[in-house]
Image: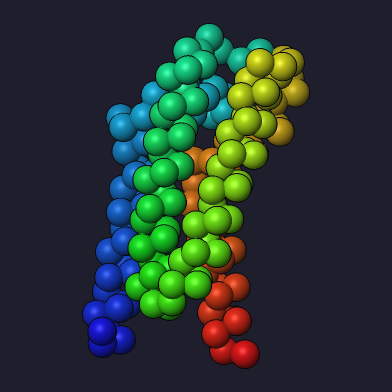
Length: 141
């Protein structure tokens, strides 16, 4: 694959990630989006359908993970890189989703920042921003 095609494909895949973010309120059930845009420091969590929220967060994580793994594959074309990344995504998914579920049930009014950050790691492709430079640095060594 030529370098220009590789860069174009990676840019298109980043565009897909951006579209998921832009249309998040249409695509996914997540009443916490609006909640965290308000002054949530003194409020309790809004009423949520926990099962629906967890499944939507999980679906969004899977979409972001799939696209992120495609980006890593296009960038490095190594099965080992893909296996390590998939393993890291899988372990982090299980741990973070369980922790998110726990925080949903135990969160108190005004004490929602941990829930905010755990949710952020689940719904945003932050691991890609860590893995892409890490694998690039490893490749250059």
